[in-house]
Image (tube, rainbow, N blue to C red; front, side, top):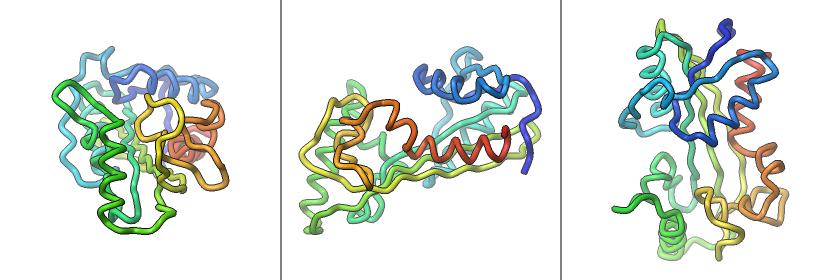
Length: 202
């Protein structure tokens, strides 16, 4: 596995909150984090049908464009009774003419579960795949997951994707009802970052 040896890491995201979260995680390792927006990078089309495929598109495009190692992630929710849907199309289910509407997306998922006739509990998991790519084309891949179930009705404040309908195993509240610090410790992204840090930074 290739170790990260530089002092600057490009994070291939235009999401300021995600950038801040990653910067905080890597701060103990003396790594300066810059975002795609700061470098004026466009968002490439995500044309793959897997989390790792889409994460690779974003990471390699950013690394080639800047000459810096680049980190990207692709994530979503998989619902077992829907054959793993929405999966890589998690955000697409929320798209509307006026922007993303995750209440609409969660309702669509619930309607599909009812139509399927699948009995509760509805097993689900959140997935996150991180890809760290270098300008020479090398990359390292770190998947993370958290298992749980899809619950209805929605519980907790909306605003973070499908969080109001996901109850992680071992907890009686949804991600949206959970203290943010706790969620960030147990989430699919935290799982992937633990693997990333151990593999390339630790």
